[in-house]
Length: 351
Image 1 (tube, rainbow, N blue to C red):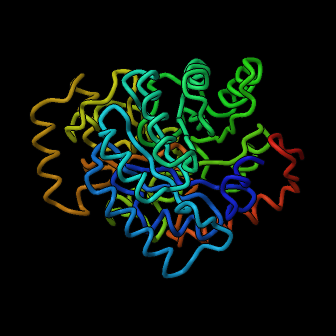
Image 2: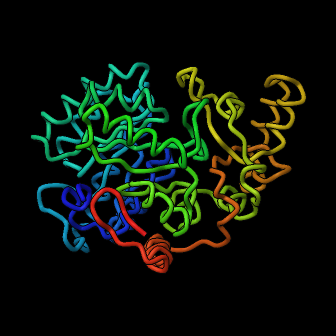
Image 3: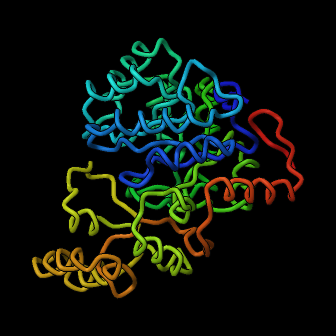
């Protein structure tokens, strides 16, 4: 499997923590990698603190080295939101710390990723691998041709946070994407699955589909290492019936003032009073914005079904019922997958 060749500390099945903006920082990324996964720091849109986050990760790893990790790279990844992140500052940070991977998402145009890919590879002499997130077959084929990434992250519509406004669930999107890439002779690119998986059952399903690894974001919202408020985390633990209690919308970005996203991208979050008011009114009113601003002053009380603050989460949120250390989450998932009797044989796992 390519992932375990490039990330020798990773254990099967390979679990990846998503680079969730403002939430996935050094403690979570290092904890996931230390537990045999591949942890990502979220650089997001504003990279001015990226070097500090990478320095913290480097110090955590220096204090307790990760078994099996190569000395040539920092055994974590970094995720960038490319419509806004500064390329020059990003490259300088990556060149200095040499993370094992960089993850690109949401450019204005897929062609913009050509320069990102080239400069990152040049800056690290190719040791930092290129991951690109897509949500459609067309985007997968385009970035494969333009950038020749090492990994494509195939994100289905059940994912929490930001993704394509129009997309398919992972069960149909992943195999169609894999087939299209194979037909186009891009079968050398590793594929990982994202969107809706929170336990071993979801991971096992993705392995059967042919994924080399599985990305989880929402599951790690209930980890001890995540940078998250108690109100947000409690909202995640309370949510049930995730397909009904979450929604894809641009309402939350409008209220938060993060309105620079490309038009074809929205975000999935837990339904709250802010969304219900916007749905009733047909748009985000000034009154709604004022109520959101007031809720920010309430701290943890600003979240919840009757609250107003944004809690991005995927449809798997209803399967999460307790907070655990990241390492414990990974161990539990591996035990669950082993219970299905899966054998790992290259890219396409077999029952």
